[in-house]
Image 1 (tube, one colour):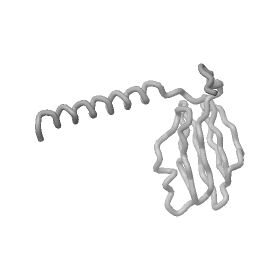
Image 2 (cartoon, helix red, strand yellow):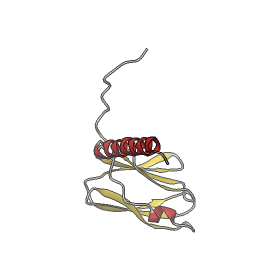
Image 3 (cartoon, one colour):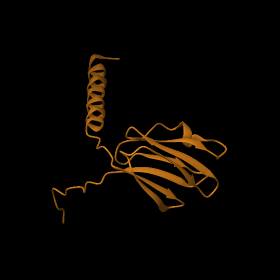
Image 4 (spheres, one colour):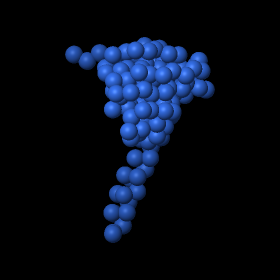
Length: 120
């Protein structure tokens, strides 16, 4: 590698690190846990209230726990239980998905998005 190649790689790494930092610092906290089964909303739960719910999915059940401002699926009747191994969610737009049971747990914010520009 030549000197210019090293400089180019360094610039790309700095830009990538800055982008990653920007995205992580601008995450919005969520307010609601939306539970969907087969695309239909079955539960809307506040993220700030600790609770445990059994979700009846299409292919079985999932156990959702909301605790300390985080939502997590801790048990699932599906054969692979990939949803159990996903990390806790707490930010707007994050999801946990159980494909065999057709269950989606999503975090949403109560706050409306402000529009700061209009494009024609």
